[in-house]
Image 1 (cartoon, rainbow, N blue to C red):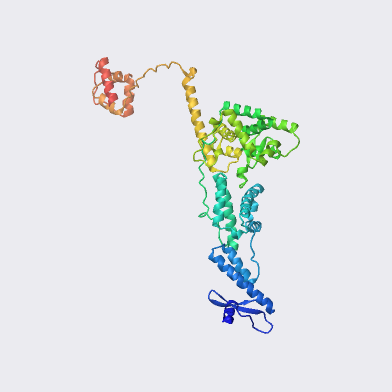
Image 2: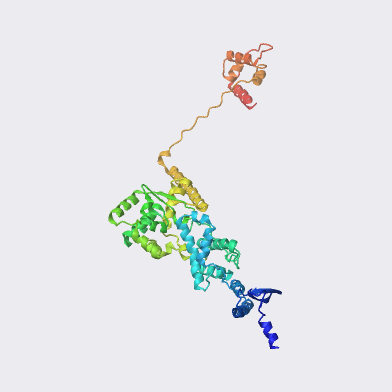
Length: 483
C-alpha cells in the first residue's frame, strides 16, 4: 500500500538509455507527458522531481485563488523549464515601446519629456502598490490609477492626454508581447472625460480701468511681478509661457517660441515686441545678471511649485475683488477654472483688441500660435461682435453728428413732356389740324408735319383749324398720357 501511494505522489524516475538524463511521467491536461530532469545524477533528479511537485501544488492553489495570471504562468514555466520568465520592468517596457514607435522621437523634446513623465508617474504609483512588471498591470490597476488622477483635480484635457498616452504604450507593447491582461487602459475600461467646448465667458477681457488696477496691484507686489504681468498684458502669453520666457525667444522685434500647450505639433507663436516691452527688456538686460530667463526669479519660483499661480490670482483678486474674479464653481472639476478674471484674461483682452482692429484670422493665429479650430471659432465670434459694436458706434455717430443735420430743399416736380407716338398721331390727325395738334403737344405745326413724315402718316383730307381752350387741351393731354 505504501509503495503504491509513493508511486502516485512521486512519479518513477527512468532513463531512456544508460547515459541519458532521468525523466518522469506527469499528466498535464489529461495527457501523459515526459518531464526531463536534465541530469544523469539520480539524487539531483529526485531533487528536481520534488521541487516540480511542490511548484505544481503552488500553481494549483494560485489558480483556485484566482491570482494574477502572469504569476501563475511564471510558476508553470519555472516548474517545467527551471528558468525564470523573461518579464518587462516599466523602464524596459517603455524602451521596448520606443523602439517600435520611432515617430515619437520626431516630436519636440519638451513634448517627449511631458508624455514620458505621464508614463513614469504611473510606473512610480505601480511600484508603491507592489506592481513591479508591465504584465502585472490589469484593468483594476488602470481604473484605480485613473481615480487617483481624477482625485488630483487634473483637468479633463490633461487627464485624457495622460490616459491616452498610457493606452498607446500598452497597446504597442501588447501588439508584440501579448500581455496577459491585454491593454488595461482600453477605452472601454478607462473612459475619457468629456471636454467642454471653449467658452468665451470663462475668461473675460479686461476693461481699461481694470487693466490699470491689475498692473498697479502687480507693481505693489514688486518689480518682478510687474514685469511678469507686463509680458502677459503686452503679448497675451499664457502664465507658464510668460514665466518661463527666455532671452533666446526674443529675436529682434519679435518673440518667437513654441507655446507649452502646442508642444506636440510644434506650432510657433510670433508676437511683435511692443515699445513698453522693449523698454522692459532693455532695463532687465542692464540690471540683472546673465540668465537664460528674462525673469529668472519668477522662472525659478514657477519650476519649484505653484506659488506663481496662486500669487498671480491673489493679485487679480486684490485689484478687482474676489467676488468679481470668481465664477460659480458648481459642476466644475477644477476650482481655478472658475476664474472669470485671471492671468489668462490678458490673452482674452488682446484677442478682443485685435478683433476690434479687424485683424485677419490668419494673423491672429500666427500671433497666438493657435492649433485649435475651436479658438478660431472663438476669435471669429469676437470679430463678428467687434463688427457689430463698430456698426453700433458708427450709427450713433451719424445719428448725432451736427454737421450732417441741415434743411433739405424741396424738389420742384416736373411733369414729363408729352411725346407724340404713332398710335396717338393716327387718332389725332383724323380730328385736328396740324396747328391744333401742335397746341396739344406744345410744338409747332412744322414739327407736327415732321412727326407725321417720321411715322409715315398722311391726311386723307385737309382739316380747318379750330380753337381749343386750355381746359380742352389739358383734357386731351391727360387722355393721351393715360392711354
